[in-house]
Each structure stands twice: as structure tokens, then as C-alpha cells.
Image (tube, rainbow, N blue to C red; front, top):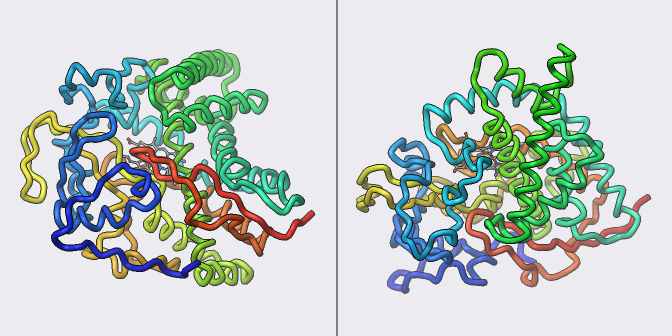
Length: 428
Ligand code: HEM
């Protein structure tokens, strides 16, 4: 195990790297270094067959994320007939659940975002901290006495799903259904096929009914629960317009955007710490002194260094435009590669070095501009609680297999581990 990985310089004159291979899924950073240097706005054929532009430099990425000419609405994309239904571009699924924040532009985006921001406030998230701690402890209790665990399945996966269900106001007795549906979606990459389609359908049916039930409860009782779905309904009943479909789509995107991301923040974060013993020791020492500073900067650094979102979600050029000297035609899909931008040496000193105390760290892990992650305060709370509690309760936690043998999911948007086997001295 090395403390710092070797720098991954691009080899001048080398051919463009193969993207989306097994090696790439395991370690995409050398390929991203090549792209940043030689082809910062690079047209590539995605595994689905769609041709898209990859934007890899930090300054271009930040600008593209804020560029209103790059729409989130998939209607701007002219998909070739042969690729219909196979590309994973969300717009082709006409389901009502798809008209959510990440697929729409202003003015609809502005209205819906304002509405949900009233219900999903940083204060509500802060009040939720004891519950996140309780969930974290309960999950660790489940395996602490055994001396080993798969941290993805036993910890990183259930924590965010129960947390979001609680926040939304899904009753405890129904939360295991959500765990099953979400498991199906994560295992099969969220594509619109078979079991995934059935899971999405079940989730939609459940959410529609839950919203309906809560609306009824609200009319009977003027001061009902503090959950997010009730908050959304209340906000919409106070003048702002929110259709039932939009409410269900909002609940769905909160689950969907807040789930796999957080699984991977915890999984990638623990992996980075366990393969960087010096950084991990620093963090453990600072936690033993009950300091929070290094934990806070550390979680941001883990997001920059090996964040859960590799590429921001789809964007489509609404008109011909130019990025870093490259012409982009109207209708072309553009993918901003957050993971590449966050390792750009033009922006970050020693970008391939993990430094938990890094301060100049305006990473793009949560995006940028009007679609900046709405759940960032919750993600920070979950990430900090999960890492601090694991390292404090299981102080000699270590990988149970060689890091090189771990399997990464080869998804397009997300970067994360399939399993994370660990061992430690059993505790009761
Ligand atoms: C948007 C990352 C956790 C809800 C985004 C975007 C990124 C991101 C990069 C922007 C995508 C784009 O511009 O195409 C992350 C990461 C997380 C995380 C790295 C965990 C570490 C969460 C959580 C929630 C959430 C816990 C909610 C429960 C959302 C929503 C949006 C969003 C609703 C869409 C906002 C909009 O379009 O206005 N997130 N996210 N995220 N995220 Fe997160």
C-alpha cells in the first residue's frame, strides 16, 4: 500500500486512451490527465452508442456548468432512431417522474427549486444530525462483533436510503421496500430495463399514494409532521404551484440523487483513507482530540480526490457554441467530467495528492451554477458522521483484500466500488 499514488502525467504523442474499459473503471485518472492536456473538449462514442463531448479542464467545466445555452432538457437532443430507448438519456423515458430538477431549465427549474428549498433547509438537515448518528451506530452494531464486513452492503448502502426515507417522511415499516427498489436500481445502473423499470414503477406508485395520504392528513390536521413531503405539499398549498406529478418527481429525485452518490462518498472515502495510512492517522488523531476541522476539510478533499459523481448529468447545446476553441453543434450532448476537472493541475496544487487539510479546495464534486447539489448539507452530514464513527469505533479498520483486487462499477455518471471488504478487531 502506498501513501500517495504516483503522479499520472499524460504521455505526449500517445494515442487517445480507451475510455469505458475495465482499466478505465478501476482508475480513470491517467486517461483524464491525457484528455485535459491533449483534447480538453473531446468527442467520444459512449457505450450506449451516443456521441457526446467530454469537457475535462476545470475552467471549462465550471463555465459549462453555468452556461444557460447548455440545457438539461433532453428534448434538445436529436437522438438517432436506431439508438432510441438504449442510450440512457433520461428524456426518452416519458415517465412523469423524469420531469424533475435535473431534467429541466428555468423558469420551471427556478420555481421547483425555490419550492423544495423552502422544505429542504440547512436547519432541517442540522436538526436531523442525531438521527443520522443513531442510524450510523445501529448499522455498525450489526457487524462490529464479527471482525469483518462488506462496508458497501452493510453500511454505505443502507445508511443514505434510511436517512432520505426518514427525511421525506416514508414510514419506518415501508423503508425496507425502498431499500429493495434502490438496490435494484443501483445494481443495474438505473437503466430503463426489466427489474429496474418495475422498481421505478413501484416507487412511483408508492410515492403518489404517500403524497395523497399526507395531503389528506394535512387537511385534517393543521400542524402535521415536519417531514419533507408534508413541507412540499404545504409550500404548494400556499400559493406556489406544484402538481402531484411534480411532487412525486421531486421525492423521486431526492431519493435518486441522494442515494448512490452518498453510498459512493462513503465507499470511495473509506477506500482512500485506508490506502493513505498517513492521512488516515492524522484524521484519527484529530478525532481523538474531538476536533472537527480536519474531518470537515477532509470530506471535501475526499470528494475532490475521488468523488462519487464522475460526470455531471447530461447537458445539450441549444445553439451552436464554442468551448475552449472547439465548436459544438446545436443538439450535441455535452458531459462535464467533474472527476477530471477536480484533478486539474492548473487549479489544484499537487492534484493527485490526497491532503485532508487542503483549504483552497473549490472542487466541482457537487456541481456548480443553478443545479448545484441541493443535498450538499445532508451529504456532508452523512459523510462526516459515517467516517468519524467508523474510525472511532473500529480504530484498526483495514482492507481485507488488496486494493488492486477491488472491483469498481463501470457506470457512466457514478464512480463507486461494488464491494469493500474490511476487517478489524471485533468490538461489543
Ligand atoms: C444535484 C453531487 C448528495 C440531491 C447534484 C449535482 C451534483 C451532485 C454533481 C449537479 C448535477 C448536474 O449539474 O448535472 C452530489 C454528491 C453527493 C450528493 C457528490 C454526495 C456526496 C445528494 C443528496 C441529495 C441530493 C444527499 C438529497 C437528498 C440533489 C438534487 C440535485 C442534485 C435534488 C438537483 C439540483 C438541481 O437540479 O437544482 N448533486 N449529490 N444530492 N443533488 Fe446531489
